[in-house]
Image (cartoon, rainbow, N blue to C red; front, top):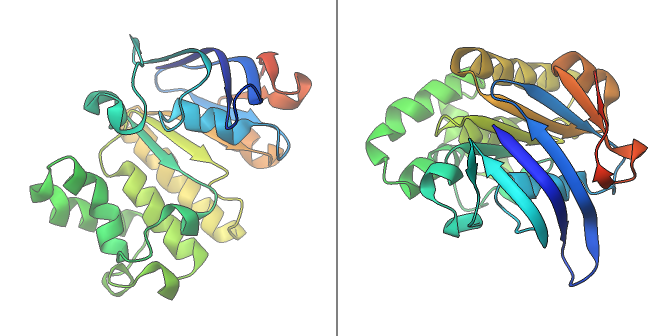
Length: 226
């Protein structure tokens, strides 16, 4: 499903955050990328989500090479990936209600007729009430906003879901609820998962396979563990 080969990426010229990293996620597989804060996991996740162009290396999604990034990526590749970030307040437009936030990808891809049914279905799945859907981000908790962000990531029915420290700011009950939503979606859709984090216990329980970043300090082919 996802193949990252020889990825070098960063945010300043000739100062890469990750160097020559390779990682694979098979169709339907749940892979955890485990490592300490600041090691480059999130940068690699952004490359995998087609949100950051690497300086070197190749990304293959569903058997096809990726040649465009962000809005320049082909629509079929952009919509094949859903992503949930660690800090929902940095990834949510504060001007939008939670209902509009969830519907945003549908409107952007010209699927407005699906908005009412799909938003209602996902709101129920992530346990957001009709009253909460009308609120803007400043009027809800971090957990409620992250529920909306997860619904937004699922709204286009992605074949690959990337969760970048999705539960790092949440309490145990909200974490369990959101992981259950992800697993329910994966069971019914066959979607693959790349879960990025540093909570070893959670990732071991959640994923089929763990890739430990710290063993290679973010360079070279990542070692794969079970």
